[in-house]
Length: 395
Image (cartoon, rainbow, N blue to C red; front, side, top):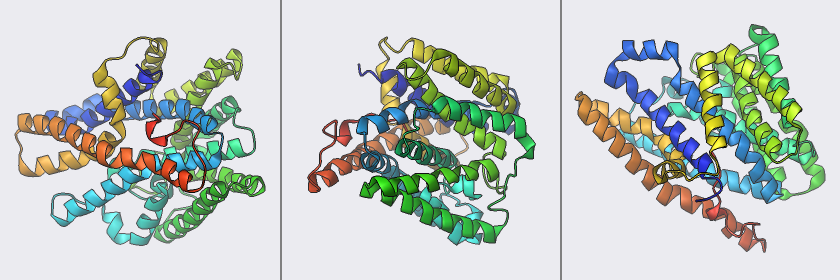
């Protein structure tokens, strides 16, 4: 058992919950699904679990690499190959009449393409080609913020960020603008273009590896917090309900970092407890008590049992969870076009999603994870772990 098996199990659990959440209206009907949704939003619960895991793991990953260059090589190789393959599959299925692409891709093609290039589409008012893409916007923004804090040696201030973001979300709430930077089609196009240039410049600067340039890139990168603070619900096509919700989700990710740092005695328990209490209050405010209790309880139980053996099926699901998360709606979309038989849909969904996830992991994700090692070898460098392909990092 690996020391991070409990995190694999959490990711596997969260991915399955998301998949079942999307299957639910097809099997039990929209009315029954909405009744359950109003009592407990299982989709947001699972997403917040993903965010907690990412917040816990990403600082560990960055500090293990000890280099912004290595960190970004690992991150880009970890998330982009399966992401691009999912886009290609969605386009192919749409061409075959088996999947419907978002109307916004046709009406706002430039903004959509530019926003997808950075993965920040939800924070730019753009609907993802595949709906689950929306969470990747928050993942990418978190990477940019954490990398910037590392560059200026403030990366251990996780408690300040978690508490600060939560406080702004709770205290400012509806007073925050939701679409300041992307209120109409023209603004979305320009915002997506500017953000693409900024993100490309920042990541390229980190890749160059010069400290002076990295400090400038970090300053620019920290400014991207405005995407969540003032553009959290820039259009009707995005999933985040408001800027306050966007800040809360970022706060949850920093809460994961707080737990990691408290565990390793990098911050005091009192500071950590206060920060986590603030984030919990923000989650209650934005998503309700059941989601807050479910998220905290699930992570807490997994953390308490982290030294225990984890069922192999859960660790396997965690291993393929990223591909499962990206591809499950494509599988479901194909099935509902060919049959209305609920039993066949359930069987086909389970079988097809797991098979697609394994194939994507085996032939896309794993080869992609080996690319940084090969690249660094051509530069005469080696990674600290010897191989990026062996690293078990959270999406």
